[in-house]
Amino acid sequence: MYEKKYEASLEQSARLALVSNRVSFLRGVTFALAALLLFLGYQQKSLILLLPALGLGAAFLLLIRRHGRLAKEQAYQEDTQSVLKDYMARFHEEWQDFPVDGARYSSSGDSEAKDLDLFGKGSLYQYICTASTIWGQDQLAHWLGQAGKGLAADSAAALSREIRSRQQAVAELAQKPALCMELEIGARPLRSISYEESNAIMEHFFHALQAKSHAPLICRILIRLFPLLTLAFLFSALLGVYRPVTLPLFSIFAFAQFLTALLGFSRNNQALSPIYQMNRTIAPYRNLFRLLEGEHFDSPYLAALQEILLENGPASAALQELESLAGSVCIRHNVYAFLICNSLFLYDYHCMERYGVWKERYRDSIRPWLTALGEAEALISLSVISHTRACHCLPVIVDSRHPVLAVSDIRHPLLREEAAAGIDIDLAHPVCIITGSNMSGKTTFLRSIGINLALAYAGGFCTAADMRISLMELCTSIRTEDNVNEGISTFYAELLRIKQMIEVSRKKIPMISLIDEIYKGTNSRDRIYAAKETIRALSRPYGFTLVTTHDFELCDLEHDGDIDARNYYFTEHYKENRILFDYKLREGRCTTTNARYLLRMAGILE
Image 1 (tube, helix red, strand yellow):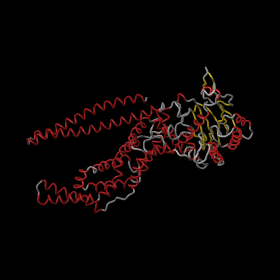
Image 2 (image 1 turned 45 degrees about the horizontal axis):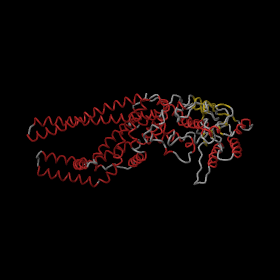
Image 3 (image 1 turned 90 degrees about the vertical axis):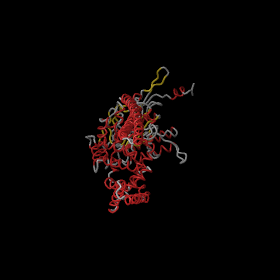
Image 4 (image 1 turned 135 degrees about the horizontal axis):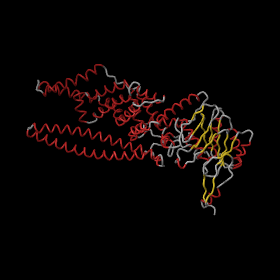
């Protein structure tokens, strides 16, 4: 589907380029002929030559307008191709080259985000993010980063309702692929400006909105009276009415207006500069507002966002006014235009007055509008998986004080779908001991659970055929590293992670702990003892603990009367001197190892 649309867009771009070249050629010919006829008509004082020159001049202006429209259509097709290429890249590994990867949202203290690859190069954020505005990118990062955090008994019901509300919105957007595509295409020009620059421009704009710029009544009268008198004296002089008097008066008034503009230049320039800086971004924002305002939504969440855009607006009309004002502000940056417009009309002061009126009307609305737009973009990002994965679902959020996790055909969303093996599991025991040989799929399984929980709690689609979960605090210990500067070894880093899990368990709230290769940084005797005691401490009826290990001794916990545990395992088989994995999770304990075989494959053993 995306390939056909991409090819159609390329063909349209080629046609537009051909038409644009023809219009450009005609524009040049028209201008040359108009200039020639104008010169000959003036030289020969011939009205017969002047009239066609004026007609060709009008045609030249129309061709300029046509060429501008063609340039916009070509830019639209380029943005369309960019969006379609991104969708096609998500079916392969090229998505890891997307420039928006969310690395700015990654922090050293967020162990879950690091373990589950939520942000940064090759992350979930990089895969699903379609947002181009800073508001959409921030909102998506917030929903993914806060998934399963800060859960408390009194907030669980409200959080559950919020997630279901987002799910309804995401499901509706998934049924509106054309709207989502148009919103992505409309926002794509905003990516030409870096996040940092865009953020600085918008903060400057918001700060300027709070400044009062209401001029006194006498000033509003004078900026209309002086240009009126100036123009009256100018036309009187041109018509020969009291020219010895009107011409000097025109010169005096024009000079006075220009001097007034110069005296107020610094103040006016400072006040109008935020609009000038935003000039490139106003049109994309206006188009995005227009698309959202004109659509019909059934989900309460999207309907509420649309109502925000229509309140004290519509937002697109307000941005249309701002775009017109920005065009006027840009004109004053031309030296000749500044000289003429301010000498005749006090142009800067009229711009200031228009800006003041706009601010008084919309200063309190613009931030809520942009926030609503950002939420819509984030919701579209959460629907991406429904467009790129055959196996996907919106998880069912179960209201339960006891943890629930039942999944069918769950896969890791960052693996190619055809290469990822689906796994079924319905957890009925607080502790799951998972064994298996090297590379059999243990770590990937833990990450598949964790990353899909992050998606589910954000309100998005998950890569599973079916998924029933309750709200749980998500804790992980998968990718632990030492820190030489702080004197923290790998083992101690893992201890700190486990300590956080124990502290969460003492709150007696629903939780899920994902621990990979528990205590791998210490000797086998201490590791087995410490692992058993840790699992014993985490074995609570209100939490799940999934632990992968190579220590088969931990499988004996299934028979420990103090721990409600169940064993699961991954295995491998051999064919024609090759090791093969099916990546299927089975109940029971692993009975095979492959370390010696891998040593031979690596050439370490004969």
